[in-house]
Length: 102
Image 1: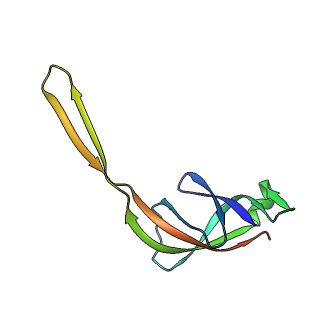
Image 2: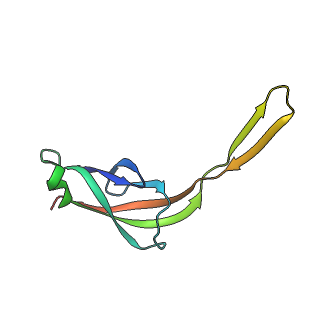
Image 3: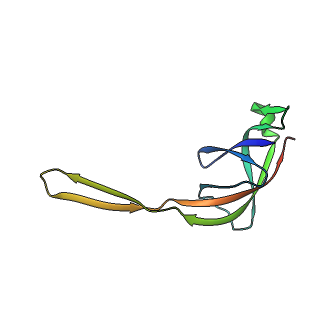
């Protein structure tokens, strides 16, 4: 059994027990979160569209953190203009507890 869920502007394929990282969510650590279901399947039964609104995926927030640093370096040739900037994307790590088709 797996489901395609939508969170943080992206879609993820998840199964029960999976741990995955998504964009930062406004939720406390160890709290339960219900994710929006796009598609869910139980081997032979496929649920999409309006029927997927009845399906539920419940997950628990494991932790919040920041990803690895990405260095951005821009310059203009022959002008002595150089800019260095770094970025660390915040994330939320979720653990899928249950998938129900409804």
